[in-house]
Image (cartoon, rainbow, N blue to C red):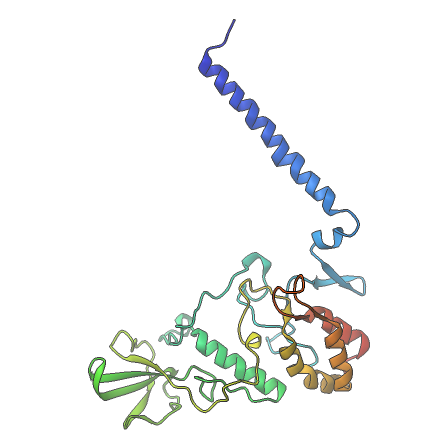
Length: 293
């Protein structure tokens, strides 16, 4: 007895679903897991985990912070670049900040919990902190001395034209002293919490200041990677930290610099990306060779 055509078609489709479910949902994944356990591949497929003293301390592929319980940098260690993934380097929340070049005005709310920093202010604050930690000039263009974005909201009599009638330092809340006292003859006011000066008609005006064109603090020291998990820093950022780490460990800077060179990787395939220094591997090598004082 022949089955009706529509039933036969449905049974054929069901058999195809079952076969492909077994092949692609079970056999194929298990085959890949088995291949990943072959000698030479198993280290990478297991997450490139790094152990020290018999304890897993991290992964060569995922960065981590070297800070104390209060979030302050531990001076005897090389510091990683910032991370916007969760609370920092969280693989389950990998992401960037989604802030771009036009993010220069902070949100200063009456409730501090609702306030947020612009990308410019984050960069300025990080550069100031890195400079202080390493004993270098942390100033950057368009940053104030107190580590926020040097941005004014300029009000004019006719909107975008005409004489200046009012000027507000939008990233410095009262009672802070504005980074400039006047702009085109008009006294500069500090921002008042809860006020939206851009919506009120103020023209956003960044002020460059007298910071050097080439900051002493490299870009990767003040910006997060796209994934927020980058385990490496640039050789320039590592070099900036050499003297501080050597001093904290009672070592010669040349010896610490040699370790940095040993843990600096080249470009991918010889031409992709840029050289990088794996921070976790470098810090473990430091602990092994130069015990902290």
